[in-house]
Image 1 (cartoon, rainbow, N blue to C red):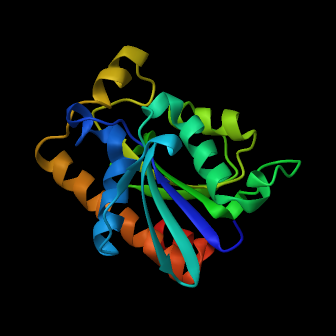
Image 2 (tube, rainbow, N blue to C red; image 1 turned 120 degrees about the horizontal axis):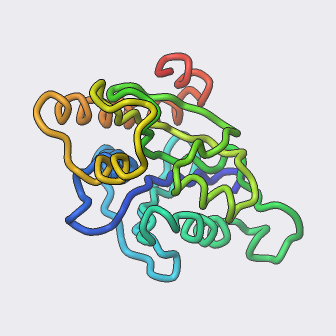
Length: 205
């Protein structure tokens, strides 16, 4: 995957979840599809909707796993295996990802409106990221974390509250701030493509 970049937006398929905080990754991926004038196609064997393009001398694969959030790792592993020559040829050792995989996801530990770019970090309890780390046996990939926690939601919240909150659409000023952060995240990814992750992180974090 030396000249290939896999950008994965995490979320849950279906209209029920379409505009919820937990689907921030899907929503940013959709903005990137529009920015590059692309249309995603369903690839059942890869458990994802994908689109391909070229930008900044790289082949870009944009993907939305259709496995539901908690099983995102299986789809990501299938995508990497499909697009990695070394994996297809049965090469030994760890899957060749590192900076070739960027994952976009919501993060309830970050305040609504904040975006943070990180690499080689633990899941911090995010089930989609947790499954990717488990399936790939590494955490050494780039993540675009999109804050979704309004001021009224405490950091030390019951799990039942979190589960209800992440699948309920924002309203009013929160919805506006959420939309702005999605647009900023899409811009940060485009900046990272042009000038590198470090530059994008210095501007965004």
